[in-house]
Image (cartoon, rainbow, N blue to C red; front, side):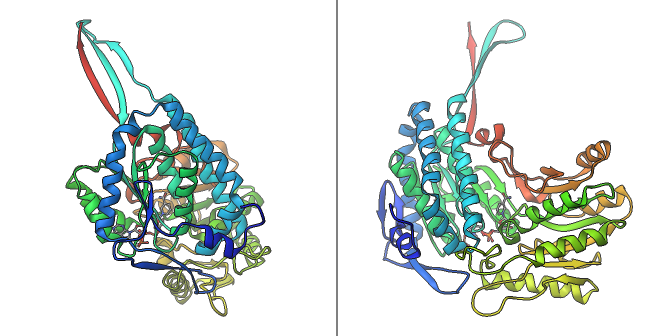
Length: 488
Ligand code: NAP
């Protein structure tokens, strides 16, 4: 695309069919599903609505391509990934517009996600060249141990709507690097970004069948035959804990390798000694990235009682000044919530907190007119029994509760079945380490409001999941270890 992309041009250009074995094709029977603009509620376009038979055809293609792909030289796999890293940068304008149209976030946020997504291709283009094993003499000197790492085999990836591109590249990148083939099913609200990504990878030289994409409304019905097929070797899912639990149960039948990136309920702790301006900057990132629709979103703020009022006022001033609107408009910082169901859930959680005594410093209302808008909201004096302290809000709402002692802060932070990420703001080094050691989470932002980085192991503990994406750990999810005992 040479001229500046327009809504019409990106919607016309994006593939709308299933990608199976290198062929773009309609769903069996020709059914389609509508993709909606959450800022207007209007349909943007239709994409293929796969059947279970299409899903199995996609797995057939991944299985057929597996042996050849595993034998492809690591240099080639690495170069495809590096070309894709560059291509995502070059095509950022059109891909960001497409993402904003289907998901709602601002163009600047979509570009930010694309840059983050591309980093996984850069990181794993390096990892493709570092797949290793080892050779050693056994303790008694009688034989030798040879350890090799081999690709797990065909994988099935299910991704959510909130980061429609990056949640894909975190799985696709290491799978390509390790020599695995795959079927990907994006969320039905945001299929376009994944279809466009698949086309980019094709253009960068990814052979037919290595990446297959199915889009569908019946996510359970198309997934079950794939997950139940003995040829599948791995399931990687990013989404809600509820769906994750069902998928783990289904995966048990074939004893599949499983990676689960599930829900979160991140506590954001501000101690009395914290640099409050830095804490507010961190809070803006941790809360308002993706309109709060992130698993890493700060779900609840626990602030020392001596600084809670000042922190709340500063945060409310910043959040209250944000511009709400359709993400395609240049001045917009806060786009719509993904759909009416999610917007209504956010509204109900705020109503519950206010009914129980919380005070609203800013926001607290749905937007006017079409689209699923909700105002950036700060609630103070939030009581312990307010539902939004225990449930994932997934919206632009910051509830603030207070604590007196460090022990109370730790207990409040850990009082959840989730354990994805926590944020800690303090200038006291020994307190920082004590708190970090005591928090039951997979990740911690220490005096910073963002943890996501392709070079770091992303993932949770407790019901936030199992497995890690990115970092030195990310490639291991796609490799099996084989050991040969050698008689010398
Ligand atoms: P979701 O409802 O669990 O859906 C996620 C994906 O699973 C979608 O592709 C969905 O397809 C599919 N799905 C739903 N039911 C299924 C079933 N029975 N069998 C197979 N697939 C099924 O989650 P979401 O609302 O899209 O995403 C938000 C959640 O994701 C939040 O809880 C958030 O914390 C979590 N998340 C976690 C991370 C992380 O890294 N830990 C990152 C991002 C998001 P359909 O669209 O067709 O329903």
